[in-house]
Image (cartoon, rainbow over all chains, first blue to last red; front, side):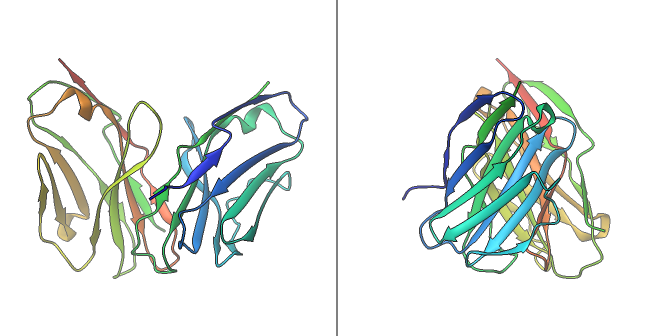
Length: 115
Length: 113
């Protein structure tokens, strides 16, 4: 079975540009999570969705960040305009159901560098 | 507040040694789940184990074992007869009713040949 698929794997862009990260969750999973990993702050939850509906976006750092889930098999995380401090590895994860006992399955991440 | 502490930032051992990674958590919830994840040098996060707050039985899976003690709020992970392939960053995480995962800062484990 295919795991969580993220694209691109690496992104290098200049400050001020729009960045779009993409995620395809595991088929049948109805909860999706976006995380950011940095050396300073570790792994942080940015936002999560249940059945395509955003449930908690309290981790989204600023209005420059937005996330959407137009259908059960696709989600995007956008940064506009991007800044050097947004450089990090961004992970998408999915899980089955809405219960907190389910392990989250992670994609390989997108390594983002903002110059 | 929910919190996970992994006090060991880095551990380095020689192959075949046993090594224990410590995890201490804080929560006021009575129902919660604890997880361990592995992040190898390639960067992905791999789920290893889940334990619920009502099950204090230790678990063994091959060379891996986990010791859960509610009395000390700890969920420690031991690798027996370590191998070079075990080199990775290991994360302990806590989940409760909000369906959120709170991660510790991770322990970087290096197994030297």
